[in-house]
Length: 125
Image (cartoon, rainbow, N blue to C red; front, top):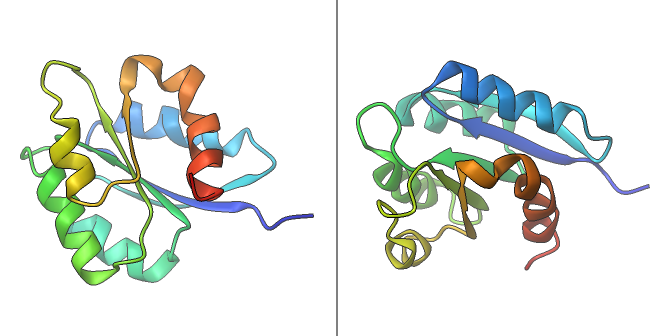
């Protein structure tokens, strides 16, 4: 049996963070190893839990999602990050992918697309 995928969720909005956490915890091939509500907390938590995949809100509380992505990848270049966003018209997919994200996901499709996307990113896609 393959080791479960270790996941950290970085989302400022507590109900969304907990919803994503519950979705992950419902899977036998995934384990939630960290949660954070800010860029600073994410950087601290990442070093302590070393997730296989980090799910990062594109906006966070101060609109620092893209900055957070860059800071995280500066400290941990091998980090695999999936960026979530609320609005597709706000989304600059090229900038997010150029900054190093492995994938971008609309929150509106989260329930149906997050788990398969985590599995694809874990597989190296």
